[in-house]
Length: 339
Image (tube, rainbow, N blue to C red; front, side):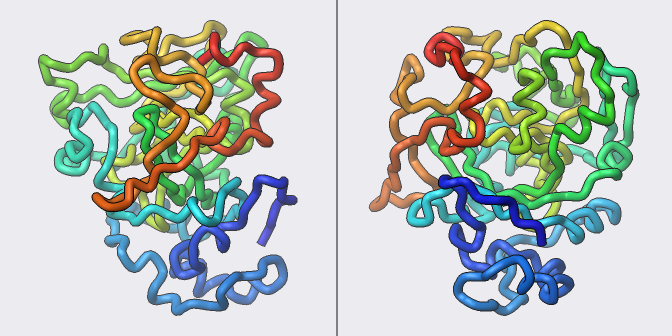
């Protein structure tokens, strides 16, 4: 297995959580022979039957199951081994913001089952030479899936640690062949009020579709991925199936879900929350403990899961702990102005 050269902030998945949690059963059974050559596992081998034992089976299409089964384990995650423990699947799949299905944290899990994710297509357009509408399986077919354990930090000051499965966004962009005018990437979520009850609510504050954006160099950064799975299985609907963005150094609202359009554009797009409240939600949305939300501090976060007797409050790290990897993207920028 390929292990990247670690920086001081890097931590292997085996340090974050026991092997029985982070190795999927399929890859454990098929890849044991190759583990010894490139990876020292902490704690010794665990029974394969325990892998993701709390994760329910999915009904993913065959092409997606094959991609997940053949995923490469990317062992890079800047972490604190005492604090960055993997969130249980139930927490990660039952506590979500996905306003297309309601504003309560439990609404997505209750209502997202109505979303049909097969088949699914994505439009790639704008300042590209190889645009068009692509079936999801064709869009990702040339790429190998990777498993990445990342922190997810919400602007509401709660966080989780989640194992994602997907591909670098950079690979999709390179195949689209951007023109010299492409400076930003704009994303859109599906609009379908029949399936997404939150979109037909008269109380909604969002002007659908949900829109997000990245600067092109942010989109091309190796940490930026398009996720189609988590915890060794396909994404649950409430977590953004079948395709979502994951940008681990930014607040969670940047990681747009159920994507149907990826556009390379010349002008900086206005993201949905920026349009709603520009004084609270900026375009960049980098995790920054030194810049508070107008209504609450960003200096600390509540790491989930927690209990009545253990709030599990931890200090927030600059760029969510990925400073060594991404700070150079913002050299010379005033991060209080470009929040």
